[in-house]
Length: 499
Ligand code: NAD
Image (tube, rainbow, N blue to C red; front, top):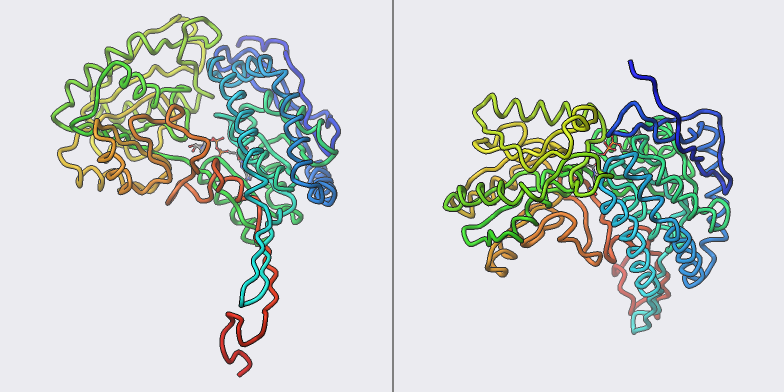
């Protein structure tokens, strides 16, 4: 057995405005060299979770009483403090979860831009609406909930945290967030910078695994839960929120289909978009294209172009080495799952096309790697088609007509994203409208097809509630109506209510 290397980074959770040192640590290894410990973060006890929520509840009084302009100023200044450290944070995130530095730095900068986008729209969105007409005087104000409990996964910890924290704070809520133990270091450091630049208790970060998440999301002072992750944990959380009668936003997994119509452009640039739409971050993205449906008249041309373009585009290896575009998976279990799904499809007659090149065979052998693979000759009931693989293996299926492919795409318990690729954009929109998913990309998929203005979230088993866009801000307020009828006979209530 190899000796574990020294811990490089020590990061403390943030509870009630103070760094939290319990003496209890959670370590995270480097997925490229699993014997190397990247760092450790302090685990928060159940008393610590309670202290964070109580502090958030107390801080809510002052924070929600500020004007929205004051909150915008404070939050953006705190975001500037994070931006000043973005390169170090990006390197730490790459070391702990394996995404290439361009991806981790891009994620942090995108999160900062998202904060500015929210700051630009929030005041108008939550402004009180007052009307006076013959029926009476109506005032609708938008009020924050109170303490928001946020629980996030490891695959894009920064943006997935910002999507909750920023709208919640700007609208006057306070937040306690629990990151994933699989990538806790950079996000804890980042949110601690953010939280330390705000009044104590407004933002706390508590680390640990399931029990810490359960203590947080089930805490009786929590007024709203925002969760991104898998459906098993979502069900656990919803049992607690049901008990406490607390609303939630649930951003769960996806099994996105990408539909390439007979007239889809298969140029090198479009193929690059298609390939990255599946393999960005080694396929570990909720909205990655996870099953490809190509019109039968183009299937050979598509396969050839895909394999050819991927050859130069996908280089698997240590993400810190120049030229590498595909890093490791998050852990051994993820590698085993991808291998199992691939083997099961091959055993039923599929062909595996390994894509791209390898930067270093020995690196790939040591770390948590699975090589990017396109599977042809698969069927709809192969597990790699029917289940979310969350890794770098993508099945390719063919279809003959549009009604058929719409039915096959929709015949899935999940409904997060989808895409339609066609030279005729109007037709792509028309077909896209028939897909039962919360987001449909046109001639793109995944990060390249995102707009901050577009609400994002799932249908069916992919969850409910929205992030991004105005809807993503309005998730964190509740309407409070005040109404004075002008005269009972002119008001719009039920006639004869007293009888
Ligand atoms: P996960 O559900 O295993 O864990 C998510 C978080 O929940 C972690 O922080 C974990 O520690 C915590 N947790 C575990 N048990 C808990 C409990 N009992 N109570 C409260 N919290 C608990 O998910 P994961 O493996 O980290 O992430 C992968 C999944 O997330 C995939 O299915 C992916 O598609 C999904 N995802 C969805 C979106 C989206 O926007 N819809 C975005 C990214 C990832």
